[in-house]
Image 1 (cartoon, rainbow, N blue to C red):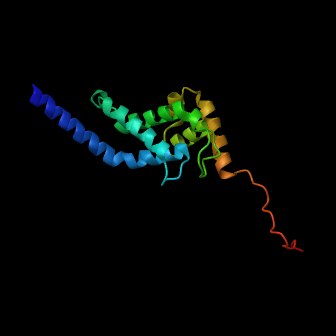
Image 2 (cartoon, rainbow, N blue to C red):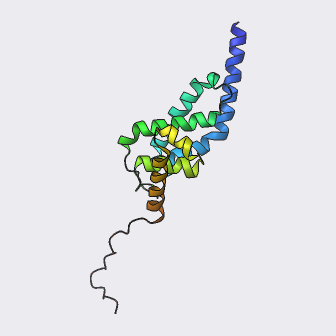
Image 3 (spheres, rainbow, N blue to C red):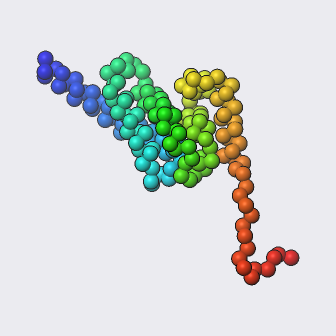
Length: 160
């Protein structure tokens, strides 16, 4: 009995390691987009990913044909939403101007390719709301508000 359980645990660990080897990079990139951290300094994204992968591993035997990537992505989104109040604004990058909800919708819809209906179900929002949030986020990303005009150095003549 113990040998059988040890064998099952070893198989489970190998399967999960193979999954992580294939999916962790993309999931980390998605988490980094969500937190709007720089790719080379992303502790919040790494913490989100670690929690999502830990939850996925804990439920590995109960997946029963379900896609583990979908489960991990779902956990990443849920953990991001729970922590969003602490990371309202990102630390730079093109997505930093977006609210956490806008970032999440944009990353799920455009980067991850999750259907509008699935995104709505995951976030418990009407499909129309997801569509509006995505459109607003895209408008902000594609047409960012202009900053103040650059100031001239002292003594620099105005163009004529």
